[in-house]
Image (tube, rainbow, N blue to C red; front, side):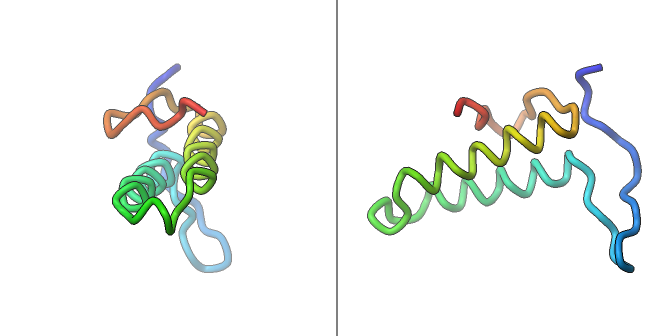
Length: 74
């Protein structure tokens, strides 16, 4: 199906669970922030780990590439 899933978030312990699309957008925001930090403080491994999380969230959520950026090239 390739499109971003649009189902509503479900309840988990009294709080709503974000959709896969929301999770990917949040992780992409975190990656952009991390990339803007001092590389000596961050290190390349952290960037690779975060890109891997983005790829996993896309895969588990059945999401293709999002317009925000191609961060799945891990």
